[in-house]
Length: 81
Length: 367
Image (tube, rainbow over all chains, first blue to last red; front, side):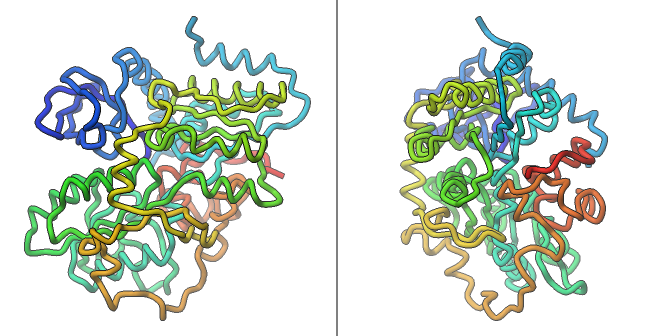
């Protein structure tokens, strides 16, 4: 529940944005970042459908890389139910 | 120069540790990375990583889950909750449903959601029904719930809120005679929202080294190195090993929204008891959306309770970092992710579930 994931903003409509990460798109609320200037192609950390902070592209990519390695390890774990 | 996880590991191995150091984390996400990446096995034996109170589902009061079940069964509502809440067991006779999931067999309308926005959507799509959103979570999850309220919710959406603050449980441990840890890794996304300064008390009041960490092995190892080095040098400070997301002051907009929609109140933690000023409650202007005020007669005060946790379940000591998950008699035997007995085996953030999912059969004991 608590894992926030970096996503790229694809489109913005008011407080709502469509975000993408690894080919998965999701509707994300920008309500908690309304005092920040946010543009398409910015990266944000998304938690339960809400962007909680901005991130640079490089930070987002390196986070994804490291999370990927870990998720690959998790997929091979013995008792993953 | 950017250091890799291996670099940090090597740096940790060169530290002249002379005694055991117990480092507590208070975030299910941290524990997941530690377990999945096998950090315990990679670190020097003297370094112990202890999962502490980092699972909001695990500390959600049993009576809140029971009340949600009663609303689902008898109030005719659509009950929505984050997925891992649905399988949390309550203590009832064997003939009765033990979890929200099991109330579905009795025709209750219970639906998992992954965002507060989904709760709003379900309420809008079902204008003739009452929808109760059972929301358990720490600050990172409760702030979006506050945002949802402020953005405007339909009249038929009600909130059963079990929001908790993370730091008061750590403060309670540190104020006790046996905190059980020598250093703290502070939760990255809680600090992203609330600001890292919330954790200053650990260093300033208790002289315990602390570092905020993100959720990659790299960030966690940097934090572990930081607190070990602080201990060795006797120079404690609050380090930030997740600067890409954790900014000084945190997300001020989110904090303002939290204050506009909710206020801090004393709150019960399952099996632990009331911790002062450790929970969130709805502000008066949202009373019309407060399930606790709008659904009267479903209170559970007269109910005979066996106890907070099921018989034999050691979740309380696991949550408080007093024992490792495998030290519970039920771990991996009677209690597994498929047949969970206690909440720590249910939630993705529960230490028992994380340990079993990553294949931990046995491990050393804490004391």
